[in-house]
Length: 88
Image (cartoon, rainbow, N blue to C red; front, side, top):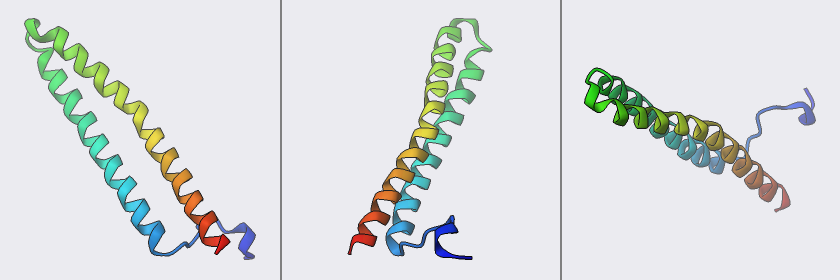
């Protein structure tokens, strides 16, 4: 396969470090989403906490928007590092 058709680009240690940081950020985001939805679900069991539970669901939903942003920023970051490594 010629080099122009490769999907995975090797830019060495920089790629690994960058990817691990964004993976960790994504994992923390996913954990927080799960926590907000779980606590919100319990809050719906008691009528006096329903409003707070709704806000936790809104917070979790907003964080679902962050997931693709983290991935997009990761791809842009790796792309920039790749460009810099090719300019050397």
